[in-house]
Image 1 (cartoon, rainbow, N blue to C red):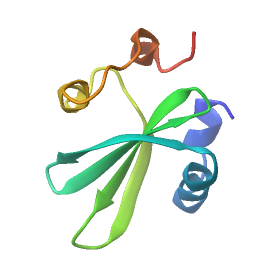
Image 2 (image 1 turned 45 degrees about the vertical axis):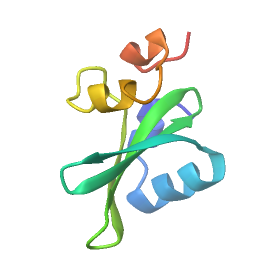
Image 3 (image 1 turned 60 degrees about the horizontal axis):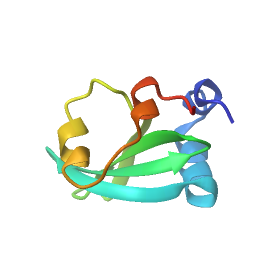
Length: 88
């Protein structure tokens, strides 16, 4: 599945796809969220979980220039191609 097609899915279908096809990489705390990073079909996806409401509020493709990158790179080494969000 291409990243653009994944972005067009409903939240429910994104959750189902991540559960069935995704590979959990790591998680971070970011403001009020626990953000889980997954590898899915060769690209990275972030799932934003809100512990107080016990809900996944959004699932988005990983972006190179987001403010969360430092939190991930403190824990894991991300491949260079992550910057473009497409596999080599």
